Length: 251
Figure: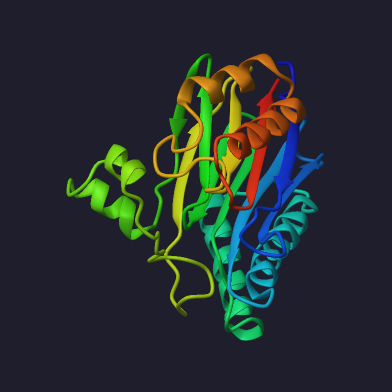
């Protein structure tokens, strides 16, 4: 069987709201001894807090997971219980943020790809999508009060576009000592793609970019060109927040 091969593109741009970019993203490829396939770790985090505390919190979250996964990849045996492993890494990051940046917090969405297996760990309103052919599927749930109102049927996403309300996270790293982490696991196919992004790129449901625009760009471009174009288009469409797009292709 031909090994699975991963390529990616990552673009992040500072918005006009703050002096610094509080988005933090990372991509790492591994070649562990126990696998002929690429193993990829991909993350986006959107920090919250004044005086750089949000950026620090986001960096702590990303660095903590990178350290944990890097150690896991150095083992001689293939890992098991990936969901439990990622959950513990998120909880460790949460504890560190509470200790070192008490005025900061962050979202975190992580995709760990091992062969054709995708594992998503998620907290907050950063997002992960999977693209099969020309279909794009949202894999994560926004932990915001506005989207909770949508899920409960009190408002629609179209109404949110016309009458925006301030999004407040009810779940994030750095908020509470106890942390609940959403987990998703699924199989990937060759030529499928992933998109991880902050809410500066896609807010609510296609608030800045249309579904067809995103799928067309990712389908027709290499990952780096796709991430560049997505960020540029979101800025053109009125997004003034920090914007991060991470596109992964399974080949």
